[in-house]
Image (cartoon, rainbow, N blue to C red):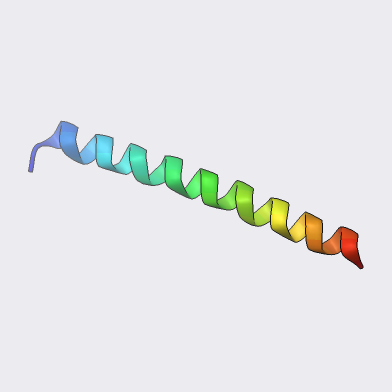
Length: 35
């Protein structure tokens, strides 16, 4: 496995985690507003 492939893979994972965090935060905010 080449270094550049590894880097792009890490970049993709970071992007995915960022998206996941945003969605999770939004869900938490929404559930807090319901109370």
